[in-house]
Image (cartoon, rainbow, N blue to C red; front, top):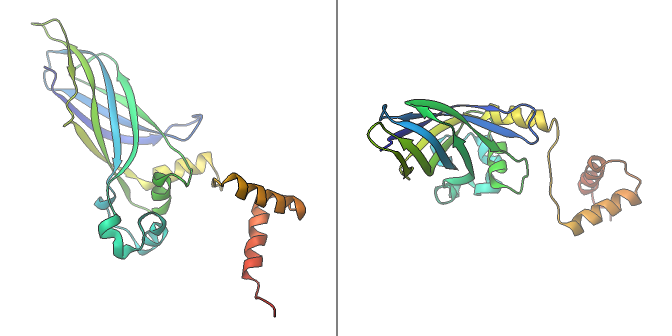
Length: 216
């Protein structure tokens, strides 16, 4: 029976993709070297192990929207689900490498975006939990089908700078903010009524109005 070892070796941003995408290089090794792996339908759940790194005071302040005040982090800091991905592994014998593309978002309504954006430096501690199906064949037996054990997993520390560089390439000096439609309509009405050319200037003007002292 195929005895697989799966290790995440590296990560890089995918250039010229339709949306921000990280590609993780995965090395797959079969301990039974005489077997031929015809294919693998590989699935992975990717988790963020937020408790496995240190946070600076600046990072703690930026992550308070996600985890609350640092004094409560003993209760609120828990492993987060990032995403699920699937990939087909082509035929190989002994070992091979495969790229796992992971689409990313810069939507600040998504917890993973808040977490990634809140980090200044260091690494993102990730865990890959694997499942799926492997089709293999040995010299003594015909084609066999077996599930990939739920115990198969891999850890990887993704440098924060890789994620930030990817976001900067796709959204240079830009961030996305999702609003309720009624809130957007009020903001847009204010923009049109005052002849303001951009939404950036609308927000700047609202900030200035909020900072003005109240006159009696």
